[in-house]
Image 1: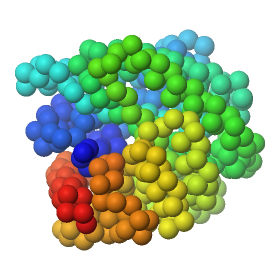
Image 2 (image 1 turned 180 degrees about the vertical axis):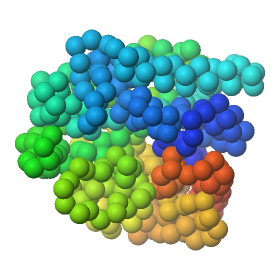
Image 3 (image 1 turned 90 degrees about the horizontal axis):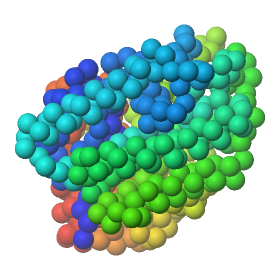
Length: 371
């Protein structure tokens, strides 16, 4: 029976990756080691920059309003590449120092093609999501180049199980035509669900094909439709409410969760993120997802000072009872904290990890006991 595991969303605080690799090896033995992304290191180490680093074939440059596609690679592109090289180099150094010959399980993260197209600008200044050709180019490049790079990464570090968390926090806005233009006064046209299905499916098919000849490697793609509050800030001349912290759906995504879950299933994703307080109606779709032997990544309300871990575990398993799911299917659930851990200090970050690991142990015991 598979075990409930802790999964890190991949955004870490601070600017030094080495210590976090060592701590993961020491304290998260049953969880996949997560490739560190540290936004505090600045442009190139943000999630957009990290996602672009996996593409390589689409050069970009940094403008005051964000990342922009360019004709040739320059200093900003080298900064993106250097950030990824630094993180991989730190990982290699730590593994060498600990005498680890093979890594086993590794987890990486990236924006999906639509959230990336909604975040990157064209040379004109408008966002790439406004141009169907640019969307196709980004999606195609991401599917093929990212698959190639991840396969090489897995071979180099002896990875047998590769987790890839794809963030598509903008997908609801893409489908409803709610992405603001460069001026902020208008919105780009909505894209069709068929286009989303096609590009998501191609992405998973290419990843699958890349490992078909290698029976020793498994790739699991997890779709995360939630976003960090720092990703969803919008430029506006009007007063705005403070953003809610934590990994959450925006209104457009939450309203279309059932449709998006179906699209994710059709496209071949093996896992999907489930935030805390998902509606009972949406949990019916998650039950179907689990019954199809797929995985879920549960967003748990666990922070640095959480103490009543057993109550959180009981609350999470209540969803299973309400849907008539057997306790044995808890093995298909992994757990992540809803806290935005990149905004915590080191001590608080480590406290969250300890609390979530304790939660996974509690869920594992409930599964063994049949609730």
